[in-house]
Amino acid sequence: MRALLLENVHDDAAFALRDAGFEVERLDRALGEDELVAAIKGVNVLGIRSNTTLTRRAVEAADELLAVGAFCIGTNQIDLPATLDRGLAVFNAPFSNTRSVVELAVSEIIALTRRLTDKNVAMHDGVWDKSAVGSHEVRGRKLGIVGYGNIGSQLSVLAEALGMRVLFFDTADRLALGNARRCGTLDELLAESDVVSLHVDGRSSNSGIFGEEQFARMRPRSIFLNLSRGFVVDHEALREHVLSGHIAGAAVDVFPVEPKAKGEEFVSVLRGLKNVILTPHVGGSTEEAQQDIGHFVAGKLRDYVADGNTSLSVNLPPVTLRREPGQTRLLLLHHNTPGVLATVNGLLAEHGVNIEGQLLSTRGTLGYVVTDIGGAPTPDVVAALQARTETVKLRVLA
Image (cartoon, rainbow, N blue to C red; front, side, top):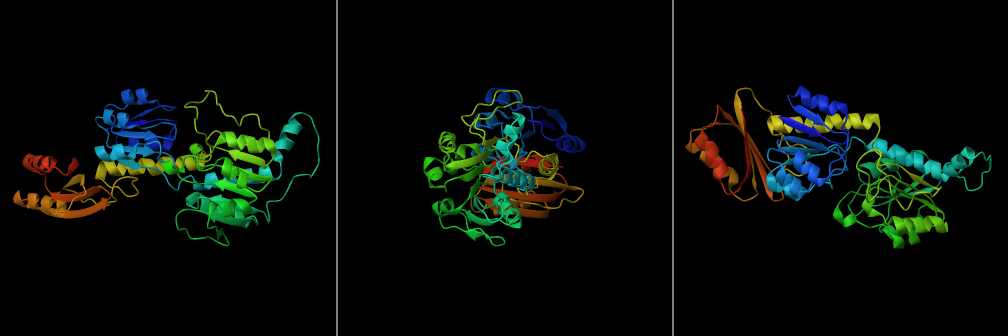
């Protein structure tokens, strides 16, 4: 089995896969589409982060690929419909770097509220300005969180512990934690918040959701943070509102276009604004988070390849079945149509195959049935299962 890990995935991921018997190749940068199409041939497991885009063309060029690991939270860089068509499992790390992102957000809220960016620049220029003008405590100020998922809700808890009053807006029905108050509309949140922090996911419908209209509705001299996705914010509009003074300060960690490797020039209209904190997509880039992500995603990839388990898969139906020694496991990904399980079991019965254990799960257009049998299946059984019109992918694990 071959694994290709890109973008400096943590060493622990490589160690875990090597211990599981994989031959691991590593690159410290992202690959463009043409490079990935060439590199992915013969690869069984692919590991990427946020700067490598796995397109349909790359998926179709992957002749041996079984699974993809996104060593990050988001999967919008992966063509998920293409992976479904090819029966590829996709895993990510939805929780591992939550704390790291939240701590960065808290530190930036404090830095901007205290005007530490301005003080820092002045000090480096030799200017001593011991003034309290424009510097505030965060205690008592209102934080508006847009997107109340794993990160937004944990930020809510930490901000409240600092004495902030928390408002949130989410299109999904979320449980308010602590004393946080849900806003019925985004406009309501913008009108009341001293600080607005975006923590939305990477779905395409979120593209450009925060632009001129939303910045204009924010309170004068408020603070803006985006540690979610680069494409959700109009940076030209943000620049104009910072320059006008309507937005007192901003912190941005994600960008519509990001360099693919260290050393490439970073281009942004936000460069040069002294009251704007720019960071190179490092919200989840702490050693603790990256180590945990490496362990978590590599473990999911290992378990899927070895046993077919899909717990917490992004795209495949969830199945976890304990595997007993001496059994053969049949993994059948199929179109979600009625009667597939009955057909499979009938076919096995016709060939005198005894079923030792079995689980079926469905999600959307796909079904996934894991069947443990005594002994090895005959070539006729395997051929019959592969020939079924509803079969997407069949694997046999001895």
